[in-house]
Length: 229
Ligand code: ADP
Ligand code: ADP
Image 1: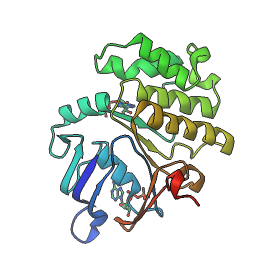
Image 2: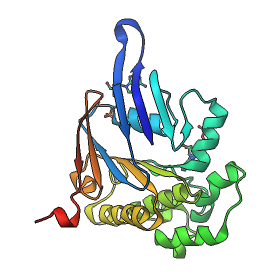
Image 3: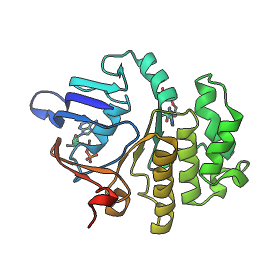
Image 4: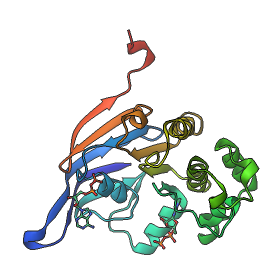
């Protein structure tokens, strides 16, 4: 993922709000990045631009070699469905559908074949194979978040984007979800980018990106084991 001089403003004239100011950065493939910053610093706008849910006012956004900026809505929707996995804070599961139906919904909407072996693998990874027939209301918050992560992974996206994925979870359940993200990065080689307020959550990432007033105010990198004295 790459942002080139991205500026995003909302509104017009005297009401204009600048959410991102000339942001240039790269998120390497296979990395785990946390985005932190005060409320209103541009975190959600950043995530939405990277997810193709929102278009920058200026500048360009790339997912791999694909430039998302300026794509038609249909093309963006196709990319969102096949190459981006989005995990919402509030899970966004369909209450009338089973776990398995929820997980395969995006593929079915996009007319993509469901790879049964991969579906099983994903459900195993998130520890939900025994719950495939349950409805969301019959699951704990942590289990619902696991289903949301499985749904985001099942299309084999290049990038998993998560908006406050542990915001509604207790510490123990948060830890399970964060370990799952590390596993996804380390074993599946996928890119994970999450917005979080939670320093505990951020401590699982390889890189922590701090936004302030729409700019990248700093970056922290997890030291490699050799660097730790
Ligand atoms: P964060 O996620 O860090 O809280 P946001 O990206 O949501 O920050 O917001 C950055 C700035 O842009 C804030 O000043 C916010 O009020 C403004 N903003 C975000 N979305 C909209 C919108 N749809 N319309 C107008 N202003 C917005
Ligand atoms: P829209 O109706 O805005 O075009 P879609 O039909 O693409 O949205 O998607 C339906 C729902 O599934 C939306 O909430 C969307 O954000 C979500 N979604 C789309 N693609 C994915 C994905 N790859 N992983 C997880 N959720 C997704």
